[in-house]
Image (cartoon, helix red, strand yellow):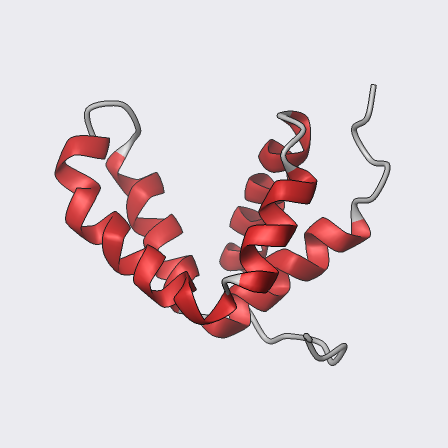
Length: 96
């Protein structure tokens, strides 16, 4: 489904993607996240838009900059592809 060509994302985005992928794996949500991102790929843009709409409420629980970065990530197909690639490469990583 996803091309295996290297995805062009900035160094800052790469760091954020590594943090997101690490958090997903730490909480044991790697498989559900991969399933949601791969099957719902066309809807990831809508998920980003939903985060923008819910940002005021979410900022009560999460830092605003994280909500904004996650919304921007979901709106960018290349960033979503890079996140899926990272999650796929982390198989068995952080399983304690």
